[in-house]
Image 1 (cartoon, rainbow, N blue to C red):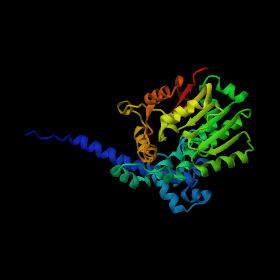
Image 2: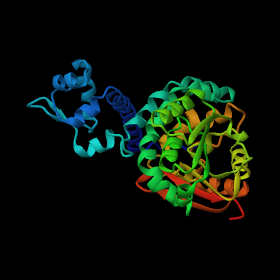
Image 3: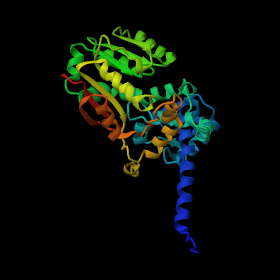
Image 4: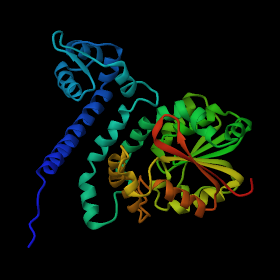
Length: 358
């Protein structure tokens, strides 16, 4: 009978890895708290003591001091003990504040939100099925808006759309565009404002999210965009669209193959289909060195995969990957399928495909 040999160094390394994850998970919650309360933005304006920062941010000093303790020991905020003064390095401010795409602080809310659904995930792990999308509303919609708004504002028109040859010129001349699963509709509003000769229709299942888009379009006096509550499996095909876009929407559909086929049917010959989705491989072994892979698979388990399974769907998951995405686009009847990196964005990539006849 063989005796298993335990490598004590591996035991120690595993324990350190696990507790490191626990530490980081709590630091994420403090990033979320400091972002929500305006503490990070206040720090970005200039250093100060906990009393000073609390007064400037309109917060209670004791909470500010304790939260800062986590951010300091987590390596995100500087601290000068002699003066008891806290500061946010400008390089860190770029990552944690502002309305641009480099501010990743809003992504912390994804952890905060999804943690509430672990109990439900345990149940469906045992019994099957999934957690319905409605259980995540409206919180998830707001989180996604916060994570994507800077990307749409700063990269959509100048960085993402130009990846499809001729699309920007066509939009300038006037195209009919559908935005699939548009959520709060900010992507639709940005498109419509940038290309007033085109018309944009944003589709989503969430009426409350669409109301956010309608309100934004109204406030910004943009009249060439409208929003409709619709399962995108029922996307109108007559009259057809000149271009269809979808941002992080295909992989959590109940019938993603059906959505892709419907999109092809709803496009004019030679129409452009542009989707932005997660940059990853379809093969787990290829994602072992992907720095975001643990986060992506966890998001899939607690949201993207389970909302699909809740509708007896395919359950592709967040990490459906480039190989499967290209295969499914091909099987849906698209041609000239291209994959592009997004400038300065390690999380996403863009797929551009066309319908036959261009």
